[in-house]
Length: 405
Image 1 (tube, helix red, strand yellow):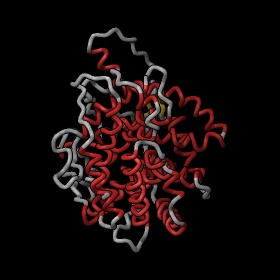
Image 2 (cartoon, rainbow, N blue to C red; image 1 turned 90 degrees about the vertical axis):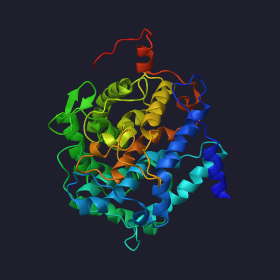
Image 3 (cartoon, rainbow, N blue to C red; image 1 turned 30 degrees about the vertical axis):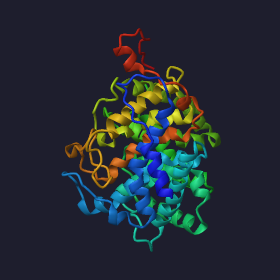
Image 4 (tube, one colour; image 1 turned 45 degrees about the vertical axis):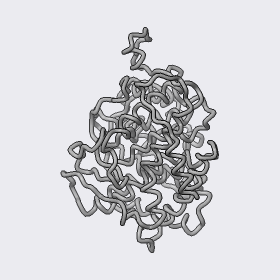
């Protein structure tokens, strides 16, 4: 019966293209749920059943640097990244009957998936130690921070296993780049849920970015050198936002950082919104571009957090991100015939993969789904569709000039 309900849910979802006229917003949330389920269902259902390693095809970049290690960690990549993106949606009880039914299934899967991921006796026990596992353990912890419902419904035995798995990541020294925030985020998890945490790992991440790596106009460099890529969005600013929410109330220095960051995050959200072209495309610059719509992790997080700048109307941001979803996840050959993601930005484009990319890496696209954690009654979802900056400008409308921070 449940499988029939799911089939009805997805067969009844409307298709939508921004080439079509219309101002109704009612179909957008269902469209996002459709994409979310299409991406996440193979990951969550397989891990919940203890069959992720059996079911998930691991495709590696042709330039892969360490085949054996990358293969082992690809499963944690897929789960940690998809979980961090849909965690806010798992945490709420909003939506119509079909959405609530879908959420109930994903909550059940998530609890079983987490249990299998951290249980050394499980065939799907994931790789927690090493360089890349530090990255994806942090995405996993970000998911737990965003979804207290999941943490609160885990039994004590599996909470202990989670803590042990995360403690093992302390053996890894992060690369001197955005990676230092991965260590900070794991400590943020410990702090949020009442465990002893290493304040130095938090301090190191915060101080380097705010004291040394802010370059101006809403952007940080990724280490000592600035790169024109999406790492301010993939990692840096969403991570700093979460760290400040947790630690600023306890620390005067961090409160000062928070005041600075309020302006920085607003400016970068404006930049991100303007980067979305009128057809939902965006510049394919920099590394990790195969994370697809995950390039807008920051913009999605600002919408979810209710911290969009006054210059950006929530319904226009929803419209822009919907166009990005359609362009990146609706492209032909985005998915394999068995439902797993191919590597690419617009379809299957394996040559876009850097030396560290696997099938699992692609699931950072799920970061765009954060606004599903908002109530359907929120302006983001309830207001009629509205053109975003690029559509207004390239339709010839008069529009305010852009200004640097």
